[in-house]
Length: 199
Image (cartoon, rainbow, N blue to C red; front, side, top):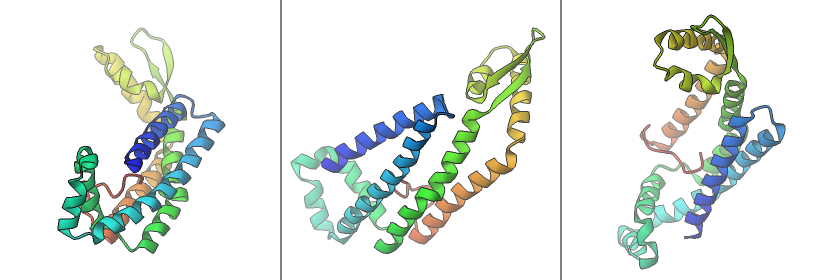
């Protein structure tokens, strides 16, 4: 029950910090908090892994007895997911290593990608003839415009801005995807299964 409460708090904290960073990617204080959050995720991942090892060791009858306790009725789905995930764990030492490497590996690549994207702006020719500049975060809103010529101009302008950083984006996305695929391969996890609450 404490883990469930902690998970919710961490999820809310993560969402809050992510929103702050998205709103002002140049703010070094928020970037530092985001980096600190990656360290917290690694610690929580190690704790979760210990719980998963215990869940994995339970016999089916014992697991049903645990999940059937009145105080855990509301967590039946989560417990079942954890039981399923436990069957796809690497050794405890490998899981701890993966958690530690994630701080400067997959998490760092994610921060680099999102920080770069959130700092980008692009120029486009507005249908009224003016040259305008907009942050990339406004792209979806502009593309929702009913005015076709505006959507076309915005698409062209944003594509040029993204193209200037295409090698960085490709490297970041490849590193993120490659890490996830490799972890799933080592765990024998189907690619569609979330490999962890905190990864």
